[in-house]
Length: 485
Image 1 (tube, rainbow, N blue to C red):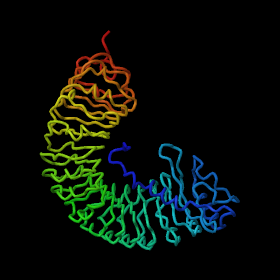
Image 2: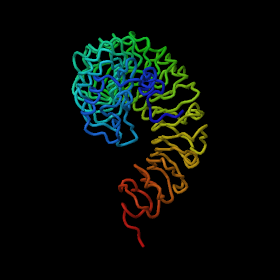
Image 3: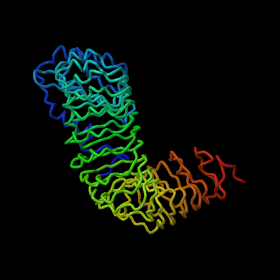
Image 4: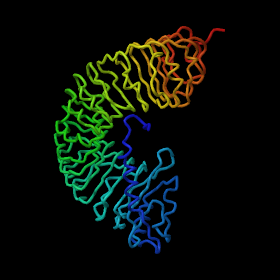
């Protein structure tokens, strides 16, 4: 139920899920004979281009053995290799490959799927060998170090059904010929360094269900092209330099769109009221833009929304009453809201894990707040409000808390009574009325700020700067002045 991180990728539509589905269909092996000699040569040439394989990902790739039985290889009819699937494990530092993609991989002529995911250190330009694979349908080369520009003739890969180059280092503009890839259902070019404008020709790729251009350096307005798409479910354009208003044709996506992510751009104007018609919407991110006016009342129709981020805009009261059964993550921080209290539809959520309401005009006693669920909380940010009382009861009922921020309030409690869970990595309770001693458990934190409170006593051995402790009543010991004997 709980998601791994803020505005995390959608479970039914993540690349690993789609890849797994594709591989299930393509995983029938016929092993009565050895694989084709050209397939073996092409694969061994790929291996020869790999200079480091510390986890032994390719250790089973040995000349003279049946390559249909090698790790990551699938064969189908006539024992021809049809898919290569190599995955680095992100939680294992040595799970990577260093090297380049050998052009001799083109010998594997029956390839319909290439899945090089999280290999981290594969370098070189866009692999031109892809143009020589007539049966190729699915290309996922994600989270590595490919660089340079995309070829202007990329439109020749007309048979592709999915193209993901996410998480590489590609630069330059996205070629206009990308519009010729009309069979694509997924086009994922996020997390690169593409510049220039949004390629309006993408409107020709009418079958798209997933479009991601996020975390690039794209600029200009978002073109008004979305009436072309009848099946789009995921639209990710966040972390660019797009300006202007949200294009009206996005309304045509209302029946099916589940993820609309436009955060961290330069968009302006009012939030369109028609967004309330997006009944399938799971995630809406409009954060870090320049939106003004009020949040439309039609937002009360977003009954299925789980992740809502409107933070860092210039939005005004009143905030509409939401009719959600459960919100997972909410961020309304740093607008012009005066909520007075944490909304009831938040308090009643049984699945919430991230609540960020910094500078939202909240004036309440935290002792009186009784949320339906505290167990799953990972992130809480209530900074810069006028909250009184103590967070001890609330925080002592969390088991996975990673970050708690409540700077600039009027909280009054004994810090020593706070149960500090092992997962807690960031604590900022500066500029409050906190008293007592600083516990030794702070050494497990990555960030700490308890400055300008009423704390006293000798500090435990720690790694934090003076600014983390300054402005208290009688704290002493490094990095502050020595304690008096």
